Amino acid sequence: MTDGEDDILARVIDIAMELRPDPSGRIKLPTERELADQLGIQRPTLRDRLTVLETLGLLQRVQGSGTYLALPNSRFLQFYFGVALKLGFISIDQIQNAMEMIGREMAGAAAIHASTADFEELDRLIDEIAACETMEDVVELQFELHASLAKACRNPVIVIVIDGLSSVIRSVIANKVKIISMVRGAFERNVEAYRALVQALRDREPELARTAIQECYWLWRREESKISILNISD
Image 1: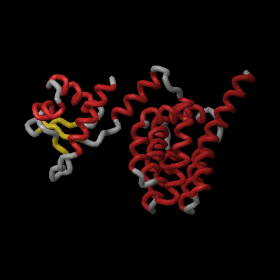
Image 2: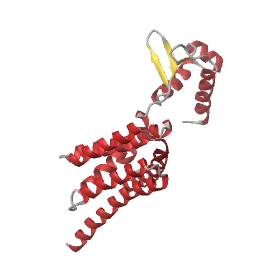
Image 3: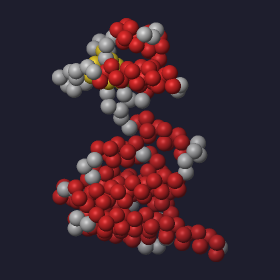
Image 4: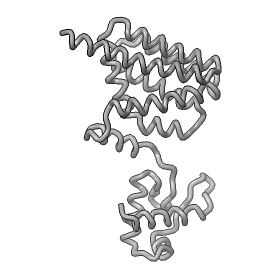
C-alpha cells in the first residue's frame, strides 16, 4: 500500500469520525458519490479503498442501508499470523517468547483485577484439563485458560491481542502438549503449575502471579530438554 493510498484511507476515517453515531452506535458513511466529491477522487478509486477497509474489518456494508464504520475484528490478525507461521516468517519459538512476555503481564494484571467468577472459571478449566483424555481437548482447554486469563485483566486490548493470536497460540500449545505427553509425570506437573498460578491470583500477588505463569512456561522448556537429552543418548 502506497503513502497516497494510506492518506486516502486516513481521510475517509477522519470524515467518518466527524459524523454522529446512529442509535445503535454505528457511524454511517456518506454515499460513495458524496464521499468521492469530498475527497476529490474518482468513485472507482474510492471503491478500491473502501474494499481495503472492509477487508481489514473496519467497514461494514449493509444491503439497502449503507456503509458503516466498524470496530475491526480479530479474523484478519488470525489469518495474518497463521499464514506467517506456515510460510516461515515467524517460528513456534518466537511465538512462545511473545506469549511468555504477554502472559507475564496478563498474570500481573489479573492478580489485581480478576473477580471471583474469573477464579471459578480458571479452576473449572484446570479441572477439565486434568480429566482430559485426548491431546486435542487439552490444547483447546489450555488456550481457553489463556483467553480467560486475558479477560480477567479487564483490558479489552489484551483480549483482542490474544484473540488475534489464537491460531498461533494453539500451535504453540499443541507443540508443547505433544512434548510433555512423552515425559512421565509432566502432564500432572503442568496441571499443578496452573493451580499455583490461580492461587497466586487469588492471593492478589502480581509478582507471584508473574512468577507462577513463568513457571508454567519454564516447565514446558524443561520437559522439552529432557526429550532432547533422551534423543542424544539414543
